[in-house]
Amino acid sequence: MLILHDYLPSGNGYKVRLLLHQLGIPFRLVEHDVVAGATRRPEFLALSPVGKIPVLQLQDGTVLSESGAILCYLAVDSVIWPAERLERAQTLQWLFFEQYSHEPHIAVARFLRMAPDDPRQADLPRLLDRGHAALAIMEQHLTGRRYFVGERYGLADIALYAYTHVAPEGGFDLEPYPWIRAWLELVRSEPGHVPIDWRPN
Ligand SMILES: N[C@@H](CCC(=O)N[C@@H](CS)C(=O)NCC(=O)O)C(=O)O
Image (cartoon, rainbow, N blue to C red; front, side):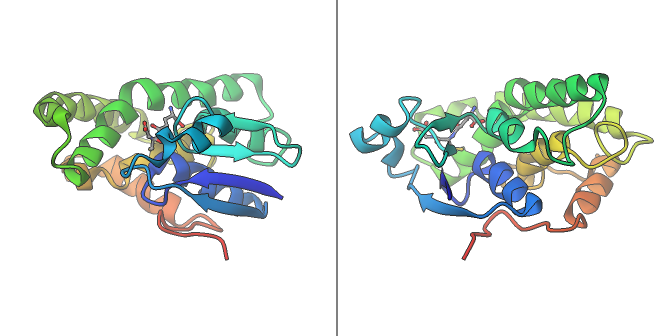
């Protein structure tokens, strides 16, 4: 059985949990307390030198890190992976956007609210600014569309949903983004959708 090393409040981990559940793939969840520094301990670093969750451990012991890479590993050959070459590249485009222009600002702003002693508190105004810039790009793309790629629910929606739906916890008001709010509702209504704090039995 697959093992997912994860931390329940993590949006990066949630992307993988959500996809595993929606694809009906059974897995065992092993939780690590990121805030307490568990991923920096020697036992975890021996598993994955990157020192971050999520980590997917395959049946043969191989480990895979980086949420976007794990999503692709699980999705390729499944119904959720686009058949068309352009749509595959557009999916990757949004996964890279999420990692470079969205998550580093929106997820970190949310994390700083959970960790008031973190020395990066002074970065908050810049993170809010950059996070809103990412939300504005998403709003513009979603205007007149239902989903990010090919008018079908896919990996780009999963990856961007993970931290966008909890962006208010980082201080982002989603009121000015009606298309994003409609898309969040649509993603929530997908079959097999589970909330961020869901864990397998
Ligand atoms: N680019 C990575 C980011 C992973 C990441 O930042 N994980 C955080 C939790 S959301 C973590 O494990 N942080 C622990 C640390 O940096 O010590 C991904 O998408 O998987």
